Image (cartoon, rainbow over all chains, first blue to last red; front, side, top):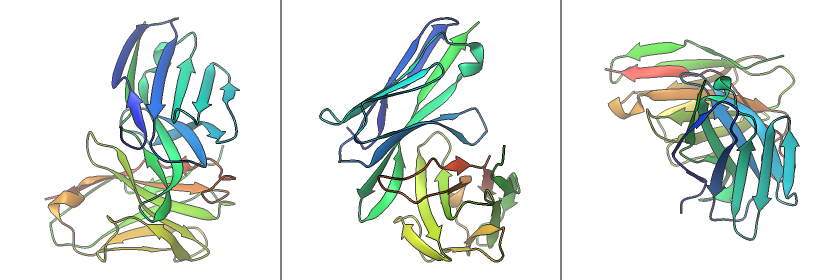
Length: 113
Length: 117
């Protein structure tokens, strides 16, 4: 897998259902962040989870981090049509000789009303 | 809520021309970044900037690229001689803290869509 690879690439659910997106990475990290991007807009920060944390909540969002498996998941509960967007994980890591935020390709979430 | 603003929203430029993309980061932030996103692809890190100098840069950020903070509010990305493959969305971001264990979220602007003809 690549550094910051989301799964699935696309997800379509009905309003009210939960959506789970996963992210895998290769190197050790300082933290992992999840961002949302609506079509044609910039990225909006959702949650930052540090390498010594295992779970974090923010409203309807729940993020887990398993550093032994080098994976993270983002759960959106009770989804709404307004949650339709692309979701990206980004790892804060020292890669290729520089400290940077490396983004995955994202999961495109569609929530049908 | 304070936000990062970018101008222009869309820039169309002939190949070989110079282009300057402008950003106004959030006022109390000290760390600034540029990223690009080619259509349908990942968001890619270009450069980070702190204390009036480049902290990190990626292999994409070659001699054709430069960044500047000309005054207390603006942060610019210049591409000296644009190529067709420079066509992308360019995002500026700022944060209160740099990368690392104690890093803080990065706040992104809505981007500049750069089209090279």
